[in-house]
Image (tube, rainbow, N blue to C red):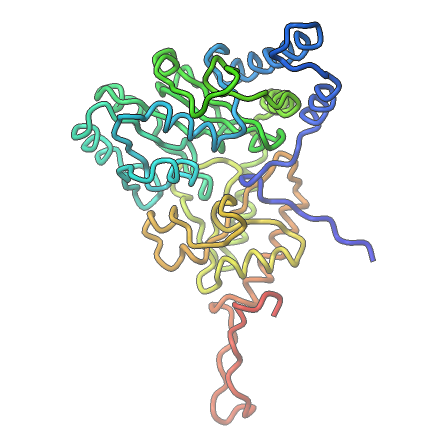
Length: 390
């Protein structure tokens, strides 16, 4: 029997590779030279590298001379935090990605409201107490899709002489993003969140931050001496092609609205729906059904979704984001559905069918009443939330 095709609804973990990115990578693989070599082959490779730099910089409103290629957004975040933050107090929102949290273990955590947005009053108070701080704030949360008040945070940072670093891995290509208008000192991008290959990313810097940035390690002096190592040219060319192709799909809001309406009819709660979010992202809490059970059950139905971040070595664990939002037990019962650039209406239909059936079988709200004396004499039926497909 032919296997049913996988329906992939986990774009926030990684987008499917775009055909434009694949073509650019294959072309770059034909180029033999090292971009640092001065012979003809090296110059050809250098030309591709700089064309990619200019393409990405133009797409996101940055100066190409201040765009540093990295292996991904994780390295870009680390380069910003450690290369700009040395000797500075670090202020980090409580819903930041592990790429920020792990590279700023002693940072002061800033609270978020019940919708998962940074509390600006708390930021202002912290900036008043900690002069010259570096603030890290993602532009859109990877688990809920909730958009953060970047413009307001940037204004507060400027007023207090602080620097703002923005992790834009999730928002790039999904909502308008113009680095030159943000007021941030630095911004991290990820290739594979745009539909490019994994293994490439970039750190965008304003003029002042570029002058301050220190490298994380020594080496051959590539990337203006700020990120040593021979660049992964095919990955970078795929990154540039994906960045050029990435744009919000006009039908994402309608597809998501249909998905969320059906999920709520099945008993789910949509996390963060009251505030602006990424148009492709839904965080669905199904009370009484552990997130791990939901992910496995849907996977058995041929549908790929996730619970929280995909950057925990494959482990499913309670989300620090949802916990910071004060969701209590629901933090353990929430899955993330994120629509890729390639999603179809039929994919949404299949998800709705599988999710509705899962909720019918596993949710306590839909469980049959236990047997009573005088009934069929059998013991009460067990709740099967811990048994995928049970």
